[in-house]
Length: 406
Image 1 (cartoon, rainbow, N blue to C red):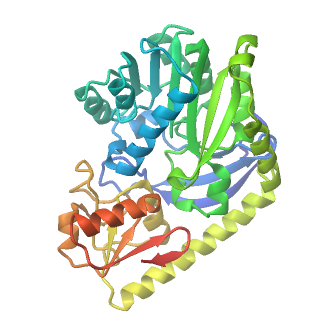
Image 2 (spheres, helix red, strand yellow):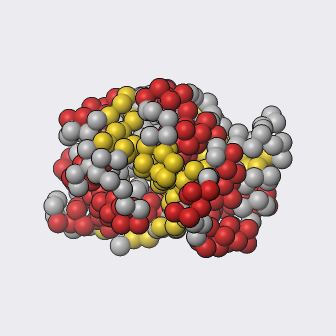
Image 3 (tube, rainbow, N blue to C red):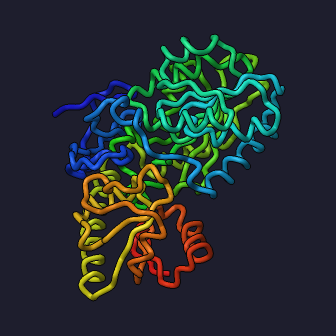
């Protein structure tokens, strides 16, 4: 089947990775329904996108992920808030909007600093309710160009924040246009997403799932922003969440050329991406081959551990756990349970498997020899908590991308 690029509309598109049938990763359901999951690459603009079997409303309205579950992420966002304000000071009565604000974790930082005009827009009903309960005004809706014009006055928002959401929208051009239309003349947008070159180089196949419609880099997103009248003036790589890219953008007008000049980081990163081959289809075919080999070796490794008599429990019923375990076809016989502090997930089965999600206390009752930490980007935080809070004395296991016991 021929696919057109969803970013530029080009036809120079290849399918390079097929992970077979995969369930939706963050829907609190015991359903084992699976949908085909493949990745496509456009050589014209370097955009990578997935097959789209479901509509966003079927994925994110009843979404079980809560950002506040990670203390490391909360700390990161607190520092990011202060970094943004130190680099780009704004008045306390300025309008601040966060897209996909989840449970209000980020906007709460601005609230505590005295900003009075903060608004979140969040499609997950449960997360939005939690945000409002903590005093964060939150609109229950998906962010699109239409909803931006409906909820916000044009050119009225001084700061737009969009963390880990740009990859979650099927129409990326419409989404970015919405940001452009709401941004004030001297306003800025701060957008962060999982960085494609990190995914490729580190074989992070467990970050590929249906909720991610795009896999992004600066080369693929720059023209999308330009078409919406936005100019990217700074780009910052950060190791958070396995490797992310944070972009700073403004309206592309003459006034902003002085207040927000383009930093050297932009051209440097574009040069780096050219060197790594983000437009080269052979790079992506080689990545796929490595992923298939990695899945096979992980399956063999865990099978051998299990057959040797080791009791292996899981920790973190996250998207990574769903994709990892469904890819290697592991079930309850190998992983008796997975612990998660998110009570919304407890008492259910991990999507696509027969593995129950339980509390950390219940997981420790089986006396595991090894705890497999699926959110490998939070390995240190999780391991420290299980040691200090729960007194776990066994060993930990991560695959990131190769097996490591510590």
